Amino acid sequence: MVAILSAVASAIAWFLVRYFGVVVMFYLLSYVSPLAGFAARVLASWIALVFCALYGVFASIVLRLSGGDRWQVAQWATARAFKYTMSILTGITFEVEDPHNYLGTTRPAVFVGNHQTALDVLMLGCMFPQYCSVTAKRSLRNYPFLGWFMRLSGTIFIDRANSKDARSAMRGAADAIQSMRQSVYMFPEGTRSYAQDAMLLPFKKGAFHLAVQAGVPVVPVVVANYAHLYSTSKLRFLPGKIPIKVLEPIPTTGLTSDDVTALTERVREAMLQEIGPLTNKGRAQTLAAAVKGNFRPPTIPAGASSISADKGTSSGVSL
Image 1 (cartoon, rainbow, N blue to C red):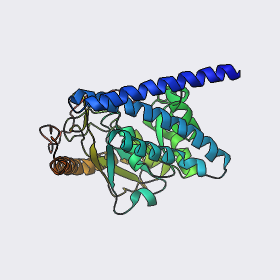
Image 2: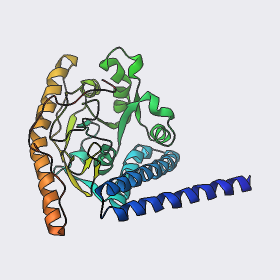
Image 3: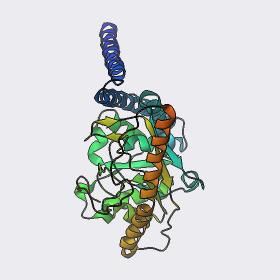
Image 4: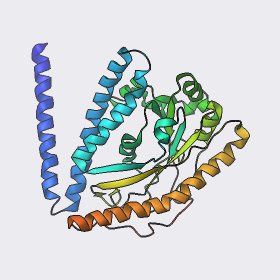
């Protein structure tokens, strides 16, 4: 047994040495090729995600054993670990604008935000509040690393396939919010937009049904469009800072399912008003940093401040 464990450890160590060697090589080549920089940061991001997921499993076990409700901060702790790891390895991060500390004082709540790319995992790492959980498809429960962490840390799984509508799919989640005073974060667009400019896809109503059923406020979170820093279609992955703005919570006390459509439109309109100026702010900061650092600024996509209400395609889980 000892020999087997030693062989496995040696194989893992050899893999990691070679993996990091490739990452370093691509980083060195990035000075002459932007494509190499894209490859370096993608590889660094994947290894950071795996290590932070493993850390999350360990942290969740420790927090579960410690008793009380400490296990409910496992996702927050793991999110912060990913934030700092990505900042070191890739140089990209999100800056949160929350002057009224809505993230720290609104509990429980349903936080909703726009969904652009897989980089939104890092966005959550930078803004995720304590005593909050993501929601996920039930099929993710058994995924290695990520699924294990989700189950141990209190992720609220939604079995959409066995539910007739958004309201029934959210019933279990509403019960969890009320009993554990646990907030949740959801993407009401239902899929990644991969947008090159400031826009929002149409909103699904699941998150708003959940807020009404649980009787908790909706807290809109607006993330600036960051296609100038990260875009898989353009093979672009650059260091930089992306602004996030937390808007005033919208109460749901006294609302019923009949009010969900109006609530959905109200939240989406509030986010539409902010995403254009916030995107312009983020891109101006990027250009200023480029000038200050005396390096070539990234290409800024046209239409940075334009708002498209329905641009993009919708796929994935619809709630």
